[in-house]
Image 1 (cartoon, helix red, strand yellow):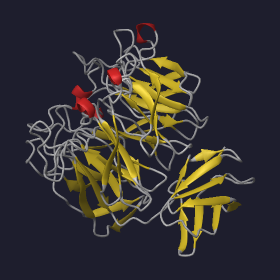
Image 2 (spheres, helix red, strand yellow; image 1 turned 45 degrees about the vertical axis):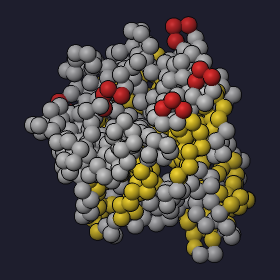
Image 3 (tube, one colour; image 1 turned 60 degrees about the vertical axis):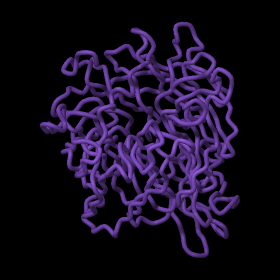
Image 4 (cartoon, one colour; image 1 turned 90 degrees about the vertical axis):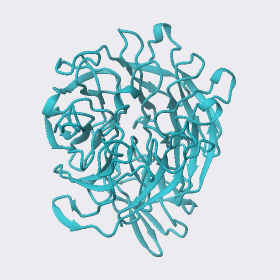
Length: 498
């Protein structure tokens, strides 16, 4: 259909575990011993190929995600996995006649403020063009929207990137391309399923948009792996990609056109905002060219200001990874963490390597943390997440110890414990006085106080992993803290009072 998957089809690679030094913000610190664990080997019966979606923590403390394949007619699944690796498939797509419930969920799930998960599928639905859905932790799925419901598929063709929930409570995302005059869309969706197209890409402004980010300024930012003003990456894949900004009302601006070569090209999926307010991301290709490994460059890391000032920070060199396909993740130590779908020390998968996990300082210095070797996973196409127990979790699209998936390995779920401390996470991360907030954490039973930057809030302990509260009168932007008999936990990011 839109060729999204073809972009990364050559990106499969790896390395062996290697912990050395991490750099925390501007200072150097020695890492505690890191522990890599393969938690789950998919075996086709419980899932196959968790692709571009990172995991997400639910209110019950478990992690949730999707697999692109397996299930009914290999149409994909939604699964739940405990932090120590007990996996349960909670939904199989194409369970309804004519796959009205959708199929092929490429991206992961979003935990919304109502406690439910939201996501999309690339295919299936009423028009066989993908869906947006809501699903409970018990696996009850509701289709909210089917793409191509408008003439000439003006509303887009399939959901290939995850959703985000805006500060207005609506959901925002991107959809795939349909014919020459529609190279993808940005849309807004209400919780009731009403879709509004905010922007339609045509090529010079980008092709096939990835995941969105809502920054602290309230605007949305994203990337496209194709399209843009540069002809340096021409041929069948016109343009080298773009970075864009769009308002909730649909005012669209191209912030940066990638030029290819050393400066990088094909930013595959999404941005993250650092503590300094800048946006950070990676490109699939460009940068250092390594003969026999990275013909078009192994990829780059970059930062860009919200006004469009672009800086390339570093190049992947195949040893620390190549062909990154997922957004970075900002952890509680102030460093960024991510995965590269190829590269690393192992050639068990191919000469390209099996993929890596890496850390990056805000200044852009890359450090290899783990090289995959096929038996512990291969092609970590999705990004990482940090659960409130402090541990990093991720998936690989293939690899593992099970050959049940067309004579190939079915993929894995893994954890990487860097010795980072426990914390609490708020859903959402910003809100007005009186707004409802969910606090996720561990061992929250017995909590005695919740504060927003020092201002006390009323709260209810729902379970050992969930507290509900509201933004108190007089609260200001800052950390949310939960006081327990055993000590105080702080939020991973400052809660922004609007």
